[in-house]
Length: 307
Image (cartoon, rainbow, N blue to C red; front, side, top):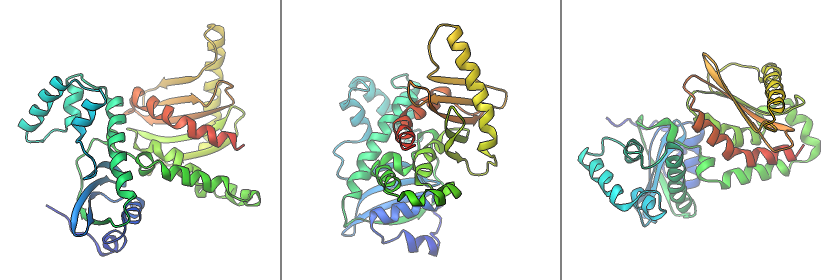
C-alpha cells in the first residue's frame, strides 16, 4: 500500500529541480521512490532507503543493468541470458544481482562496484538536466542494505565540492571548526560513506601519535572516540611489532575479530603516519569492509595532507 507523502516532504521534494529535491530527500533520510519528470513525462527513477540511493535509472541510458554487465565483460552473454530468464520466471521477486551472485558469476564486491557505476551514470545524467523535477512516492523499500550508496558515492561531484569548501576556509576559522567537529564537511563527506556497511558502529582517522583528525559515529551509537583511540593505538603498535619480528614488513591493513565485533585498520600510506580505523559489530563482512576502506583512502589521504 502506497504511503501518502507528508506536507513537509512535498514542500521540499515535489516540484523542485532534480539536484535540490534529491539532496533534500537524502538530508531527511527519506525512503521511497522519486519519479523524475520532464514536460509531464517520466524520464527516470531514483529509489531511496533511509536517505541512501538503492537504485536509479534514466531514459538517457541506452542499456539496462544486465546489458551493461555484458558489455563491460563481467558476465558471458550465454550465462547472463540464463540468469535473466530465471529472473523473469520468478516474476522479478528476486533481484538480478542476487541471482548472479548465487550462480557464482560475480562477487558481491564486484557487483556493488558495477551497480554503483550504473546508478552513477543515471544520477549524473539527470543532475545535468535543469528541466527535470522530482515527485515523491513514499513507502519502505525492500533492498539489500549492502548494495545501497550515499549520494556522494554515486555523484562524486559532491565530494569535490565539500573538499573545496574545506580547503578554502580562512586559517583564522580553524579554532572555531575544532570546537565543533560535527561542522567539518570532511567528516560528513568522507567517513559517512562507511555508514552503509553492515554492522557499522564508528570510524576514526588519526595519526599514529594519537592526533584524531576526523571521526564518525553511527546513529544510535554512543561512544567517545577520543577515549577509544588509545586502545586502537595499543593494538596497532603490537601488530606493528609482531610484523617486524616476523620479517613481513610494515602493517598496511590489520583486522581483529572478537566476540561482539571487529576492528579494521587501514594505513593511509607506506610511511604509516596516519590510519583509518573502522569498528563494526558481528554483522561485519571482512571483504566488504576492506573494499570500502580502500575506496576511501585517497580522500582520507587528502585530509592528512592538510595537516
